[in-house]
Image (tube, rainbow over all chains, first blue to last red):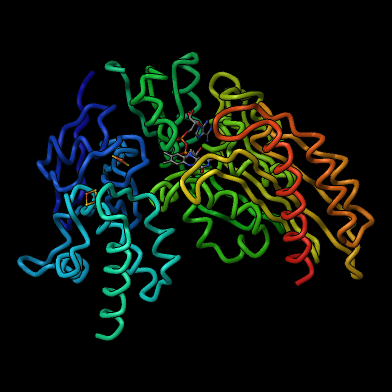
Amino acid sequence: MAKHHVTTTINGEAAEYLCEPQETLLDVLRDEVGLTGTKEGCSSGDCGACSVMLDGRLVCSCLVLGVEAEGKSVETIEGMADGEELHPLQQKFLEEAALQCGFCTPGVLIAAKALLETNNNPTETEVRYWLAGNLCRCTGYDKIIRAVMDTASDMRGA
Amino acid sequence: MSGMRYEAPGSVDEAVTLLADANGAARVLAGGTDLLVQLRAGMISPDVVVNIKNISETQGIAADGGGFCIGASVAGAEMGENAALKAAWPGVVEGAELIGSTQVQGRATMAGNLCNASPAADSVPALIAAGATCTVAGPNGQREVSVSDIPTGPGQTSLGNGEFVVNIKLPARPANASDAYLRMIPRTEMDIAIVGAAVNLVLDGDGTCTEASVVLGAVGPKTITVADAAAALVGSKVDDAALAAVSAACSAAATPIDDKRGTVAYRTKVAGVMAARAAAIAAERARS
Ligand SMILES: Cc1cc2nc3c(=O)[nH]c(=O)nc-3n(C[C@H](O)[C@H](O)[C@H](O)COP(=O)(O)OP(=O)(O)OC[C@H]3O[C@@H](n4cnc5c(N)ncnc54)[C@H](O)[C@@H]3O)c2cc1C
Ligand code: FES
Ligand code: FES
């Protein structure tokens, strides 16, 4: 079967790739485009390690076909920092040690950024529910939740 | 799955032709939150996957004769952002919003939930309680079908070769009417319902219930519409006695399975509890 030629935007820049119809956006990002910051945990939508933004919506890239990105805009963890300057969430996760192995972290950061862009004053419960689709085997979640709450509070203060 | 073809037609007619030509070896792709998992697991291996999201008739939420027309490509997140829809049909929206995580909400559609035909589908009981219909397009044109006629059993639908759901329609609402959906899951979030209960009702000026519909999910191979529970509500002020009768009728109607996630006895009891609570919430919403 012929490969599809896909033209899309990744982290603000025009991008194109060839992909098989059944390849997921996660496969394509990692294997064709070489952006390996997006992680594969389960490939069934359960863990959130593969979280990316697709046309401004938080999605699991393992549940999107690579061909579906045609004409759309994709944002991954590689686009989160502004050059050398970390996003406030990234900075806070480092300061507060909100990660251990780091496998879940790109997905958590992408998801948390999406939350803070719609709600800069979330309650702890709202943060926990918003991030319920991001599994972490290491931290026990408390540090993640606190880092997101603290970033929100800093961003409001700024 | 190696020979799979992908198509993203721009019109209903093209989609119907693609589906019909594949003679049962095609799959519609909406949000993909069931389809991609099933592809990955090798549970299905279609010759062609037809993405319907580029078809304008499947997009957006529109006012429709006093009610709403929700395109088959509309994801849960988009429904949650629509204030008018939420105000008119809070139970339908809460059913759709219970599907999966924030990430899944960015993709999952009600039409996909309906056509996947899981007995535990969270958006389906409230749609049926609402009396929702859907537009089905196929080789013989379009037809309006009651949502309750689509699923015929676990993973099975009444859709024929070449047919797909274009939109779901919610009817106009009288004053003092509302709905609610509640589910029971063994975990706090990210789990499949072991009981779901939807109640849609209309009150008159004094708060007496004049119309009601009570629908259970996840306690049988299909949803169960509990006429006795609706009858217990109609004519009542949705008081404790009526709620006790709703609970008893729903427990009597439930035919759940027994598994590690919940025993028959537990699911049967909880079906009554969830339905009574949903009725109380719907009535409270209708009064305010
Ligand atoms: C992590 C995770 C959590 C989940 N949690 C829940 C949950 O809590 N509750 C719940 O009910 N479900 C849950 N689901 C299942 C799934 O998300 C829902 O069933 C969802 O509504 C499916 O919609 P979709 O648009 O993604 O469908 P798709 O995956 O695109 O399609 C589902 C099926 O329906 C068919 N189909 C889709 N659209 C149409 C149409 N318009 N016409 C005809 N056929 C069509 C497809 O061919 C396919 O067979 C979960 C899934 C995941 C991955
Ligand atoms: S890899 Fe996509 S959710 Fe786990
Ligand atoms: S830090 Fe290891 S999985 Fe979250």
